[in-house]
Amino acid sequence: MTPPRKRERGLVRPYVVTDGRAHPTRNTLDLVTLVTAVSNRPLSGLSPEKRGVMELCRGGALSVAEVAGHLTLAISVTKVVLSDLIDSGHITARASIPKAQLPEAQILQEVLDGLRSRL
Image (cartoon, rainbow, N blue to C red; front, side, top):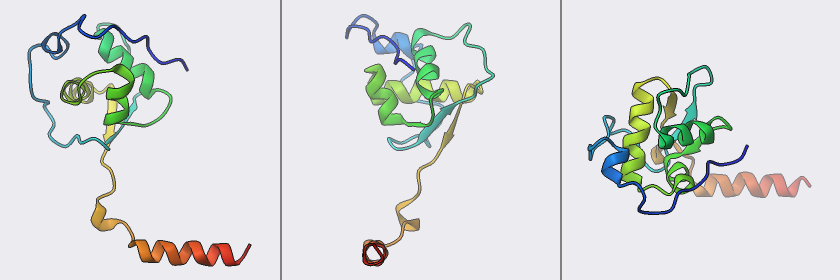
């Protein structure tokens, strides 16, 4: 899979990309939220930025930050574009694991030490 061609900065203003909106329809998207393309959705009628997101996410899940980086878009613009694609059913989003649910570093270190001792 080849990433979409990057445009020169400044060719399209952010408010054009977001249809003049400054805020996404979903407040649940953060930098580490994972997004994946829905494979059976048509790309016709989508803006170049939305098509770029679809092409990127067809290869597997990417974080909001990764999508923004690949498309060289501001995070705020990326969140608006992703919200639109979620609303239209083109992509799905999965929240990252909350820090409270992650095991403590000490437990992980003990598991790692135990695995190393068996080698």
